[in-house]
Amino acid sequence: MISKGRLAAHSGFGALLCGYVASAAAQGIYTCVDEKGRKLTSDRPIAECMDRAQKELNPSGTVRRVLTPPPPPKSRAEQDAEEKAEVEARMRLVEEKRQERALKTRYPNRASHDKDRAAAIDRVNFAIEGATKRAQELTEQRKAIGTELDFYKNSPGKLPPAIKRRLDETDANMAAQKALIAEQEAEKKRLTERFDAELAKLKPGWGAADTSAAAGPAPSAKKP
Image 1 (cartoon, rainbow, N blue to C red):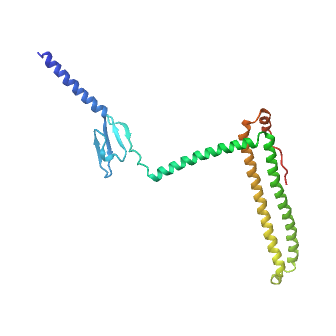
Image 2 (image 1 turned 90 degrees about the vertical axis):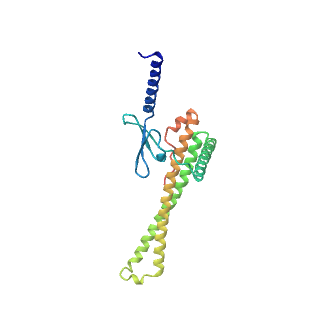
């Protein structure tokens, strides 16, 4: 017959053993492949694999979790670059807010914005008109020179230098006018996009009448 004292001792040992088994089961098993290609296993995180991923397994062999190494510490240059980027981002935000306030002060209503849009587009259209007119004049000059060239088509070596010079100058001027027209068309597109973007920012701050007017088309500018 087992005494109460021995029974208690056996019970305490059993509880301790069960606790140890439960603790080991709860802790899991760690496994990894080190830098030499060796597969390592341990009941605790493996020091040789602190620079690489290692798995913690359940007693059944299934993956409980994957331990990944912490990122390497950042260099001073990287920290400085991040701090600089943060400062620049804050400065951009401050500048955007300043520009937004200036925009609202400059255009208190839709009419003032429409007026500036029309004036800017008109200036570009005027430049396009001038370049187009000049290009037409040069085209006529080129035709006249072409008539003179017909006299020398069978003997191009006898072409007078003056005619050759006029031909080269006319072709160069025609190319310049064409480039100018293209530049002004691009400028008109840029202005339209700018005023459209400003309008989208300004609409919420205008009164009901201006907001309603903003839904309609912008005033038409003079076209070439």
